[in-house]
Image (cartoon, rainbow, N blue to C red; front, side, top):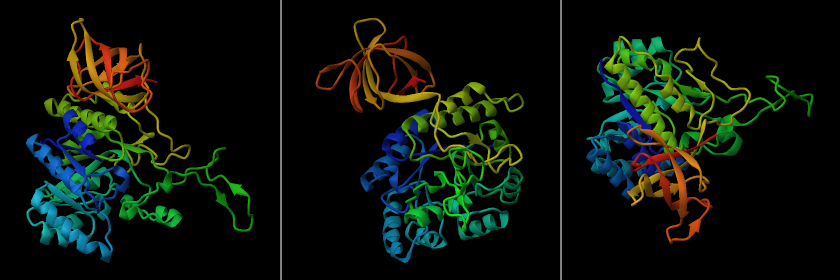
Length: 410
């Protein structure tokens, strides 16, 4: 069996580094235009150059998303952008539109082209058609049940197939959403999604103005379009067995904590299965790590539709069994035993005396105690009063690695 690639989101350089450090084999990222996550931060031209260089020097891959549905006014800038990418040599360009596909072939002829989930590939005939046109990989539609995915792989053994295995999913058809544009004027298919599907809705009958009917009885209203988050952890081995090439994790808008932990969990799950296929059982301790990062209620969605309901009619709120507090950028020993000075990128309030959970890129987990806090200019603090860099004096039996994540119990 082929070992599948773990493909993680990289909304910016910080998240890219975490994904690679914690186990991702590849990342997907967007440049200054043409991606479907305009608010993710994304990469400038200079940052893309650095990102691609970092990926290749680390033996990793990076795919660039250009999967909007372009208008006429987008075509010339897209030609220029693809020509620029051709000089950088990323490992793939992700497109949805047939016109964008043809531009990529002409202006970036040396780069593999991946067909986005937005292109709604649901059957092997469509996959074979893309293969004949020169596509290197198909990211299959999320609406496909497992047996259909298996059939596509059997019919198209030479085509790389990628599926989503974790993260937020849209109620609309493979993410091709019109709700956002209709309600807010922000075109989700152009990278400007307002997440209107997560809002609370009530039904009003035309001739009874002001009389609101609950579609599903709930005093707070009903989240008609609100999907749970995808999680295939307990069925991951089934996709390995049928030969899926890449396991994709959604979440370019999520935190470095999310990028790191999801990459680490799915990487380790794959490794555990590959080392002992006959005796494999999903590791509940690994699954618990997924519950510690921000998420909505989980579903395995359309892959196994008889097992769970995809919609959450009660809330669109996130939950997590831990609170992301920051990460260690560097650490040095002090003359005192088990005491270190650490440069910490603070993402939440921490105070002297706190016992903090730590998880390292090596997946080593331990606790630290904060015994001193000061700002970079030397001013002492009893707690972190803002985000950014602080110097922590910490007590720990383990010497912290670079990019060790810190989190608070909840």
